[in-house]
Length: 491
Image (cartoon, rainbow, N blue to C red; front, side, top):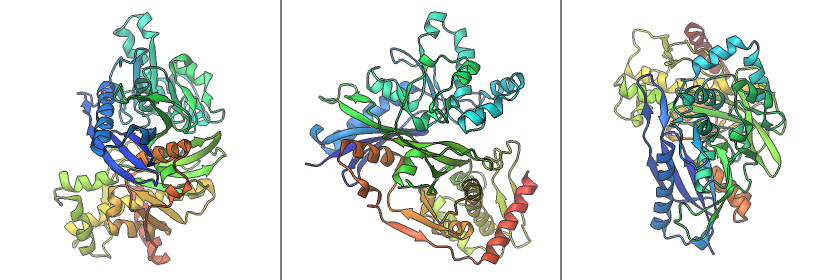
């Protein structure tokens, strides 16, 4: 009998449901976008109820369109958009729109707390492994606590629960029976002590958050509960895995050993290295989180996030109008003068890891009289690889590990020019798989192994194109020097 796992990826733009077979292949994918609620102040929110309804709808569509039988379904896995934070009542109803990870509405709270509590930023980073920032749930929950009391009485306020979107979906899918999260998501809240792997009493006190309002923290392959997807299934399915999306992609890419690295090329990029069972605080501008935890074994990860990778190509199309489609960039880059020295630093909203310069703005340097459209497109494309190489260099310094292979995923990986330049600049092999949707696959693989229908072979079933470095060391140093000079000017 065939066996399948339903992998749900609840991401920023929408929610996907994938039917994954025993060999780790996606048989069918269904997805549905949800509304991006943007206020006059630029605050970004999502409607948790809409996301829950979409989840039910796409799972129903997935099952009905494939004709898969209930007896062939062995479990569910859920990946999620990490720091997006929901507040909901014990009956499951949202108390307010969820605050999206990229929303900075809590920045004044962070600034005020940092001023009033000396050493707080260092305490947060020491205890959690990540910088004190409005982009993480701790400050977002504090924002809820300071604003929602104006709209609801005290008894109702004490009825509130908080969680990332995995927790919210789990709570709704299990009809309030399971209030849980996994270590990877908890490690991104700035409320879990990354050394003790539990909610930190001191941080909870600082932010004024009741421990009872936060979910139970579990292994990424725990038994999280059961769901009938709102009564659609006659028999409940077990939910056997939950992970943050970047962590799930690391797992699906087979990066299970210390020193293995994956990069997701999307609108932005997440670069994550598995550093094994021992915690290590970064000294080079990276964050340390729990990569994933399975069967009582925790693996930590060093991570750097970049705001503008695929978004640079969108800028070429939408603002500069130099291209009409992302597919135009590669042929234009190949037509460019290879000796042109133009460097684009896409700091449109500041520079993230490892530089952390929020006030930096984009710069273009090194142009000559012969620089034209082709050269600008080449510079934009290459800026993606430069930024990622900065993160990889920081990882090597922090870990002491020489990176020899970079496993990649995402739409821009279909650009052969970019992939070859990435291999040349980072001086390592770049491995491009023939599969997509690694976040959904990561939780599906973990759930499939838990259910006993998958084994380690699912990690090696995909075919890969390998790009090997071809650039001379002299040329590589010359390129990096141009980038480093451009960064200095940007800062």
